[in-house]
Length: 126
Image 1: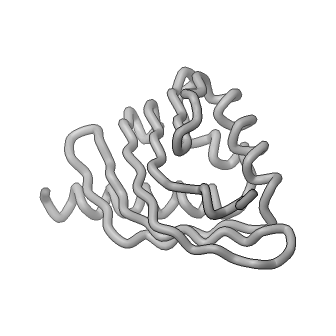
Image 2: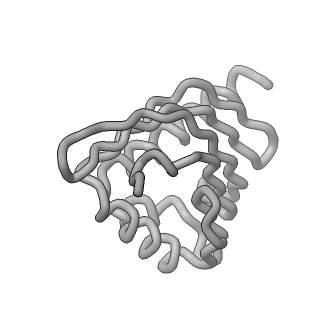
């Protein structure tokens, strides 16, 4: 991967994770195509920017805060892959940090396919 492609992928990923960490689903939605596919963990795919934003809001409403630490990012053609560490702050103030990965297919600086690979089982134990 060229230095320029890596820098562009890193900058884009940093912007997207800042949007997610803001917990403003509309800020995240601004990075999505109108007909994007959004898949979180083992949930069913959600189709469309508005539906992805609503799905994100439902999940974020369960949390007090979220913070992504970008560990590695790779950009190849129209795909950006990132390895991250996510710290979730629950409503009771307790935190959980877990590893995750995302794969995005990007078109004109908009995410058309957004796939998040994470095990959130420990986040809300039964």
